[in-house]
Image 1 (cartoon, rainbow, N blue to C red):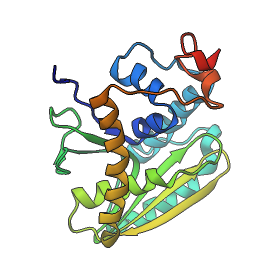
Image 2: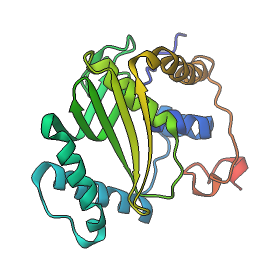
Image 3: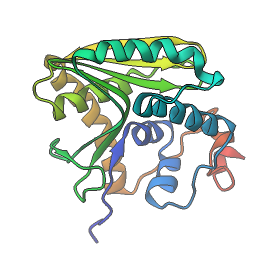
Image 4: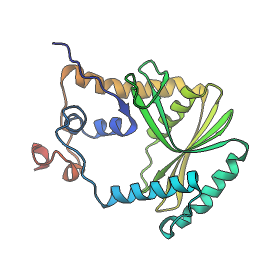
Length: 222
């Protein structure tokens, strides 16, 4: 019987599959487990909300994140000759055409914490509230989303800002980089689609097993 399940993708889902296909299956396909909120995730949500409100509504930052005010002021200064957005949603179809977040053909989603448009250049910022472990695949995906949505943009600078360390990791991409970056990204997504087609979701034990929502029934987490 033909498999009728249709997957959609994001940086977090691709990363979850790479960490452990078994967890990916139970969390995103079978949906037999969910992540439970913890102190780290709640802290991240709180900080992101503070920063979103500061950019969108000009709400003063609380003491907890006051040290990030100079960064936001810098982003505001840069955007004076363009536009500044917070929590901007970018979605592509399987044909890599722009669509909306909840559209039936939504296939690849990204939420940009900060987007600065100064065509033909753009900036993307992602707030990171955990330990400094940059994964440049996410920055590449942000750049690809911008190139797909805005044909007039030729250069994208994507950055992680680590709120705990007040540090930054940054890469700049040109439109000429897009074919190679798409080849890498689509190869990763194709592995997930192949797992779905063949119903093959092997467990991948690691140091993350102790925090996995599958640990009560996965043999590797016991």
